[in-house]
Amino acid sequence: MKLVVLTGAGMSAESGIKTFRDSDGMWENYRIEDVCTPEALARNPAAVNHFYNERRKQLYEAQPNTGHKGLAALEKYFDVKIITQNIDDLHERAGSRQVLHLHGELKKVRSSKNPELIYDLEGWELKPGTLCEDGSPLRPHVVFFGEAVPNMEPAIEVLRQADLFVIIGTSLAVYPAASLLHYAPEGIPVFVIDPCIPAEARHRGFYLIEKEASEGVKELQKILLGKC
Image (cartoon, rainbow, N blue to C red; front, side):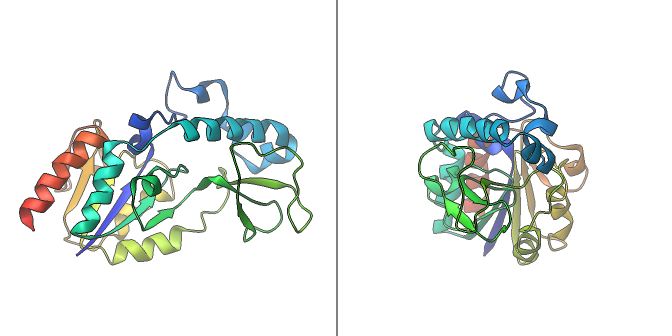
């Protein structure tokens, strides 16, 4: 049975990964326009690199939480495919083997000219002006606001094959990722795990689990394995 999971920032919040929406997070001192747009990279690449270097340092200190591990454990019973809006590698480190990143990967960098030239970054620091083999500066392998999301089509194809669909820790407000909800096969069970259920998910006959990711995944396991 194919279990497809869509995860957002709430999935990694318990691991200490901050987001723009955290009022007390490290992102609060930055505007999206200054660090997460192609224009910002062209205008001030050193500032953009500094911002993502700090995020990498944070990621190296973070560990997968029990929610990540719980999803990995479900691979014993289901064909689990994870579509994540997160750029961390906590799903992989928890043991999940099929992870599709919609918005890029923090521990990777790529050519500024050719999006297909992608490299693993050793350590947390990308020094400004570091060049790749095509002579262009390396940039974070992250989809900035205003850029296309290359993995949307593969994500849609994954979701169209789902027998079960689980949504964890996303507001369903960031597009195009939020539109994935509409590609799930009609009639399949849909579970939503979040302490604040998104308005888009209410009144649709979904299974609503109003808990943080770790506790929510535990409840999901009980429900799913009780039905196996």
